[in-house]
Length: 130
Image (tube, rainbow, N blue to C red; front, side):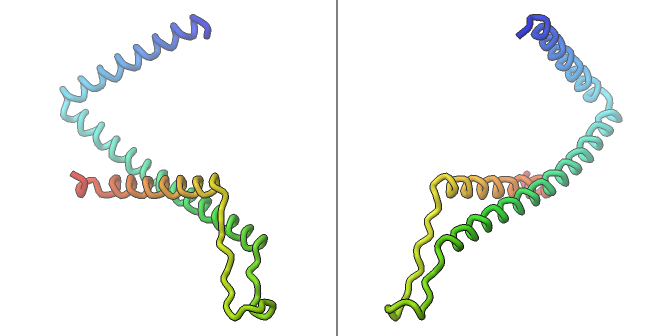
């Protein structure tokens, strides 16, 4: 890493911290500015919640199609025996086993979707969480 880049990064970080602190002090001292900032924050939060909901919907659809494609692949490679070709009176379908990495990925996606839903509910109903 170049020392000039590091110096610029530190200087920018210092300026950002200083600017944020100054804005905070001004906001605390001026009730009108405080209201403006809170209103702006609420509108940005509402916009973010909408974006997150859309992203969550897309992720959920992708996860569903991924799972469906895996199930289709398994059903195509492991067809169930038909009753007419079997000599047994009762046929049992083969147990479906998914590779461990696919199963783990499905579980992780499911957990992520559940966490996103929980976060969205908290953001939609902030009064209920306090």
